[in-house]
Image 1 (tube, rainbow, N blue to C red):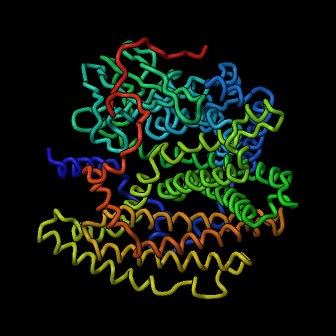
Image 2: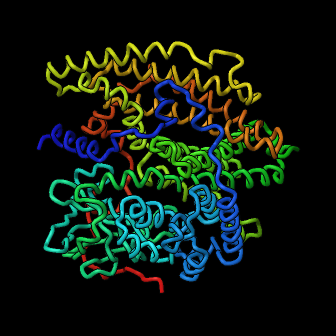
Image 3: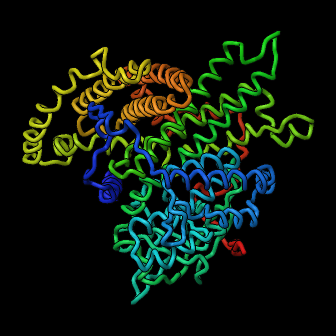
Length: 623
């Protein structure tokens, strides 16, 4: 198969898995189209008093348990979450936060699921990963959305009680390109027979239940699989630069028999199930990222007051003060993004597939930057481990560990680059519906002619709406006080963003999908606008109890975001992308191997892509 044919196949598989209908409104989708519909997110949806009370009680219980029974330094040192911690959290209901009470769960809203993960993530990111991988992408979420009543009754009570689940999609040679999936599920009477190898199975080493993606013919299907089924071997437990306590392995399937009744949905719906599950499942990462950033605010405040250099607190030096402002403003905005998106998930009136993806992308990038700045402000102490700091008599602040732990968030559940492409595809869906065949290089002359007429009607109606709007009126959004100016900027800029997308389509037509740097900047601008909106909405609500202080944080964040937006717009058209792509091609061709002279490579010999051979089953069952 040619390279072009392989690309076309992968693209087709991805398209088949997409949700193609928009039956509910989407704030972010309209934002990318230049239509700033603030009424979709303001006022933010509210929970019932009863749900709020139960949620607050649960978060307080988790806080008490963490403080009394969890030692994050021990988990980092031993690279393992103690079994009694898992059982203690299970006793609180932490493994069934969003599972309905009818199936033994707590039945709490996503808002409190996220607040619990924000709390746990600030204290022990590895523990937050255990809980979120189980509930966000493990068995509970896909069964909640696609499972039969029989499947829900059989598996959800077990998940809620603390039987751990894992999600198995990635393979040694399959990352974000599911068309290459090689694990197979062959129907044999009332069973499927699974064969293949899965890589990076978070929770897979200790899981009782697995969600496994496997190829059934030409399409991909999803199954619930008992982890102790004959033929399943956990080949090894992987180690990483961070999140040392996670139980992540390589799982092999050899003639594993799975009952037909364990098929989730219908044959061929596996990828659709995975993508739909992640619409809300991705909310766990923004929550842990917000927790990381909020923790960074506490540490940078305390340290910058305690440390004195050149006769002044380090926080009073402008070089450090700008970093403190960035960390604090970013933390407030990330919490705002997380809260708004989870509230929308609870409310269910909006389609949040783009919002959830934006939240994951934005929070993972900005929280890492905030933690990096914290390490910089801490200086040498930021680079030193907490254990080493404590051993020599200082406060054991795990700044370097938090930075290492958070690095995976930019890769987990879709790398930032893949997220940008996915969001772009959804954000320009209206354009593709109107002019898809016009920019499709494979389209026939007749298809192009039909697309031209369809596009003409769409753009004749749409383009005039991008000329002026409420952002041009100085009195718009006056109810937000000093933040009104920022919302006017968001409205104006959303129209500018839509115009820029149209210019890109006009300029590159069918080649636009390969202009990934351009599309990435389009998405990053949209993410900034979404975060600005969320921060203003949160500040307006918070100010009723906290006075002007939330406005100050949101105002500073918006000023910072506006500078980033301006820079991204400049780089849409003035950049080195074409030079970079050409140079990268030369690098790949070996043109510059002389640059590699004078070094020694410490890498351990072995194939670039491989699977472990032999060895015992390292699966560990938590009693």
